[in-house]
Length: 357
Ligand code: F6P
Image 1 (cartoon, rainbow, N blue to C red):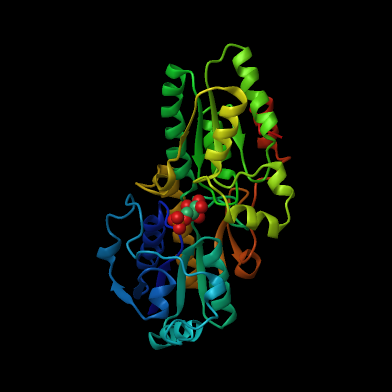
Image 2 (spheres, helix red, strand yellow):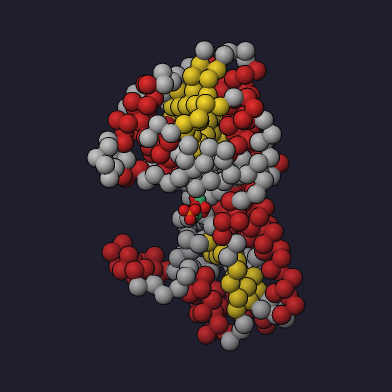
C-alpha cells in the first residue's frame, strides 16, 4: 500500500490535472493499492491539514480540464520559516500532517517558489517528488514545463487577432505577455505571431532602437507594427540602476505596467497611434493544448514509476528530449532564462525581428 499526499502550489497553469491524473493512472495500473490525500490550496492545505481523500473517480475526465482540482495558492518560501498569525510553526505543521497521515511521499506540482519549499521539506526528511509546472518555462533543470505550450498558443492567438486590427487602422500595437522575469513565453509567442519587435527581460531595450525599428517599417511602407513585450521587459537605463534605485523608481511608477510606459514613449517620439493589449491571466486559463496533455501525462507516469521504485528527492524534468530525474537541491533557487546569444535569438534577428538592443 502506498499513501501519497498531493498538492498544487503557486500560480496555476494548464495540464496540472493531466499531470496528477498521470501519476494516479500509473500507480493504479501497477496494481499496487494506493491511497491519495489531496491537500487543498497548495502548501496551505498541508500546513493546516486541509485535505480530501481522492479516488480514481476524482481523476476521471480531467485530462482536458484547466485549473487544478485541488486549488492552489501562493505561500512564499521566505515566509515558511516565520510563524503564522497564531504562532503556528508552518514547517513543523507540514511535517506533523505528513507523519500523522503516515504518508510514503508527497507529489508536489509547482514552479520556482514551490520548488524551494519542496526542497526544504526534503531536507527536513520528507519524501518528495515534484513536477514542473509554469507558463513561464523558467524552471531550472528542465527544458520544458507543462503549461508553457498552452500559454504560447493563447498569447499567439492574441497577437494574431491584433494583427488584423492593427493592419486595418495602421497602428502600433503592444501585446504584453506574461512570464514574470523571463522571456520564453514572449519570445515564442512573438515569433509565432510574427511580431516585428520583441522585448524580453534578458535583453534590456533602448527605446531609441525600438523607435528606429518602427520608423524603418514606416519608411518601407508598413502601416503597422506589432510589439510583443514581456511583462518583465526592462530598459537599458533601468537595468543599469542599482537594486535600491530601481526599487525606488518602481515605488513611484505611474504606469499600470511596462507596456504603457513604452507606448507613451513611442507615441511621443513617432506621433503614431499606439495601443496596448494585455491578455493577462487568460494565458493561464482554459484547456491544456495537446502537447501539454501528452507532456504532463508522461511526466506524471514517470513520477508514478519513481514512487513505485521508492525514488524520492527529485523533480521529473525533460532534458534533450528525455524524461530525467533532477535532484531537488539542484533545482531549488535557480532561474532558467533565455540566453541572449542563443540560436533562437540569432535566428529571430536573421528574420528581421528587433529586440531593441
Ligand atoms: O508564474 C506564472 C505567472 O502567470 C507569471 O507569468 C505572472 O507574472 C504571475 O504568475 C502572475 O501572478 P498572479 O497570478 O499572482 O497575479
